[in-house]
Structures are given as C-alpha cells and as structure tokens.
Image (cartoon, rainbow, N blue to C red; front, top):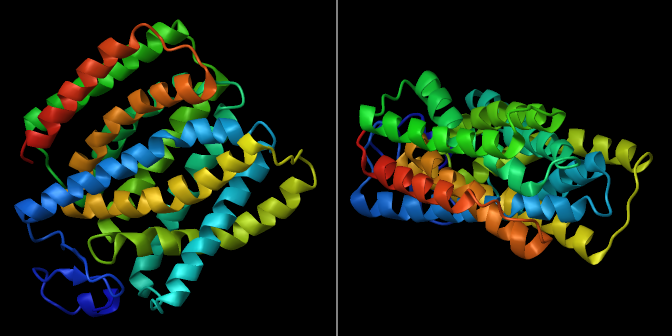
Length: 319
C-alpha cells in the first residue's frame, strides 16, 4: 500500500511499508504494546546514532571547512537515500506531503547540521551536547502545538525537570554567559524541533525512512550548489579523522539514524520519543572523552542521574 492509497482508507488502518512490510500506525489508532516496545527501541537506536554526531562533526572540521562539511554531508546522504528510493521504486509522495517534507528538510537536513557545525568551531562538543539537551522539551512543546497532543501533567513535570537539570548544568559550565556558539545552538534547537515534529507526523502516514529520504532529496540541489561554492573558498583535506567524520555524519547520523528515529516516533508518539533524547547529551559527553580527549565535567554524573530518572517517568506517563 502506498502513502497515497492510505489517504483513502479508514484512519484505523495501518500504513504498510512497500519495501519492508513493516507498518507505521496512523495517529488515530493506539499502537499495540509490542509495537510501542519496538518503537522505543528504534527511537533509542536513533538517539545513540545522534549522540555521535557532534564528535563526528568535530573530526570532520579538522580538515574540512564548516560549509563544505555540511553541504557534502547532505549531498552524500541524499545520494544514498535517492538510490534506495529508486531501487525500491518508491512512488513520489502525494502533493499534500511536500510542505511537511520541506519543513523536515529545512530542520534536520540543512538548519540543524549547519547551525551546530558553526557552533562547534568555537564550542566543545560537551558544551554543545548539553545545550542541545533542551531539544526534547522544545520538540514536545512544538508537537503539542502542531498536533494538538495533550500529554499528562506527570509527563510535563518530568520533562520540565529534565530540562531544568540540563539548563542548570549549562549555566554552571558557562558561568551564565551566552556566546555566539550558544545562539547558534538555541537556533538549532528550534528548527530541529520543527523538523522532528513534522517528520513524526508524516511517519504516521508514510514509512519513516521515506520521510527522511524525500527530505534529503528535496534539499539535494541546494546542498550540491552549496558544496560547489564552499569548496572554492574553504580548506578541504581528507585525513583519517575528517573522512570518518564526514562519512559518519552523512550515513550514520543524517540517514540511518533518522530512519530508525522517525520509525520510533511513529510508534510511540513524538512527545515520548523526544524525551529519550534527554540521554543524548550524556552519551555525547562520554564519546567526547573517549574520541576527542575532552574533559568530562564533574557535574555530568549528577545530571545523568537526574535525566535518566526523568526519562523513566516520561516513558510511563500516559498522555
């Protein structure tokens, strides 16, 4: 069944993925317990993939300019996604989906990678990871506004507590001063949350991997043009680190990570899936120590404990 066909079916029918046979439940139908468990695993895999994005970006910046890194990352991801769409003969999405796909492209394909890459020129990955820890709450708020979802008071209390822990950690580490990098990161939060929200909504009507696939294809012309222009003005040196950083950010973060992430959001809902990302900055802190040799802040274990408790509460709260 294609995404177009699903528009004519009753809302309680699940949308079947043309290539894999998996199903993504429509918003009107509560997901079965097994499906919710699978969705939680998928979303958690996405968070794990995303947690390596900042270290990979830092590696990429060792030899590649920021604009070149972002545009090459998006173009390479689009070529992989386009090959999958072509090989599986996936039909072009219905016209009503293109506005949402444009938001996905602007948020997670162009906006977030660009703003965070610019921030990482002057910010450590540990600091950036903690600031971006506010993404779950931002996503939950935008999701409630966009979809009309009404999570429970317990859900919001746990989400706000987790966000407060992240904010306290950020203020303690930065001394209360906001830098240009912080402004880039806060901008990235808003635009990425919009992309996640719209992508999660679309993943209930079409397979999640097709959501990010078409979002990448929509941005391919812009990324190709940007790469041509950026490579003429920025340094480009393929070292072991810069190559690994480019390949991982393109394949692991930009494509495969988003495939399982949108799949998970379709099964358990955007607000609950977004709260799993409270663990992302803590994972990134670990990677920053082992891969980049950065100093792990003393407050990180306390923040980790508070955040993990909030994750457990939000996953049990009923919206």
